[in-house]
Image (tube, rainbow, N blue to C red; front, side, top):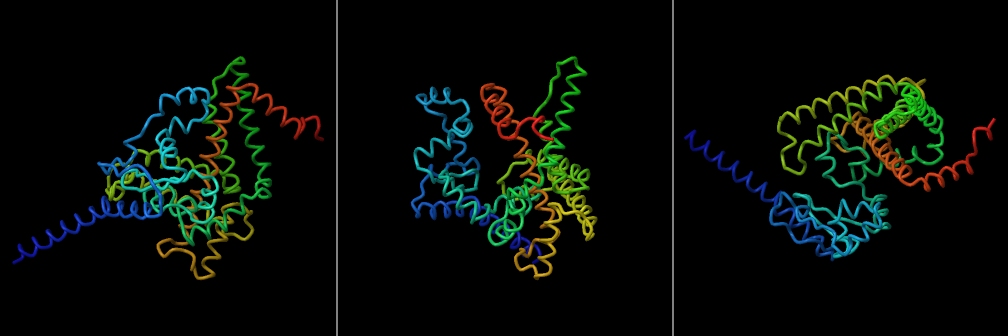
Length: 361
């Protein structure tokens, strides 16, 4: 009797697992594609092997476009995402494709992109596949929760607020430039500088000071941990159902780093609860969390605690102020070095607008 019951439970588990996987891997993606197609949105045909999606069928630029690409060397999206460019030409400015089991709506119309970014939030898979890295911060949430976060955080990056950070930006940048001068002097005028690494350190220093104020040294340690977490997560395939729950070597490392980052952020948070503490970005997030508690937390999802709201948005500020800015600055310096005429025009414009050191008392 017990054996029969065990077999029934086992068979039931197998059937349920098969039904779940069938829905997740086949039926649900087809349902999403059907909904998009009913709205007139087209895209490449459904892939024969679902784990690859349409990305496996990437197309290379047509031979007759090679000359155009050679003439416009900095149109890198055509090279890196040649399949996107081909689908855009074939299906229009709005089309769909799949990456694994994830169905993606690609929008290349600038006005539509702006409308979506201002009103819709982010796709839900970001908080699932990149949960330890992004949590449910402003970069990965959607709906009312995303709208509330945007209402709180966006004003802190308006022009008048950014102007208040100029002094600390200048201080940090001056220190970096002085370190370059010192290295050059010590090596008799010749020195190899890894500019991208130094710019990443620079942006980390600036955002640490802006976000954590006098606790910026601890903030820099948090950002180093986040950078390590990002590197570990890049080694784990995304989009595979259940993979993030398996206690593999990489997953255990991800869980450990996530726990340490949370503890480090909350340690600073507790130190900043003093009413005399200076105002910084972290304090703005703390005030928002306090407002949440006072208003009953109606805008916060049931599975997100007030402290996680703080932790997740500290991570968001890191990626907004560190990764994007550092990479953009590196790319700009590379282009200026490659095109001296651009460099001369940029320098002339800066001197015309800002003047020289002799122009200021």
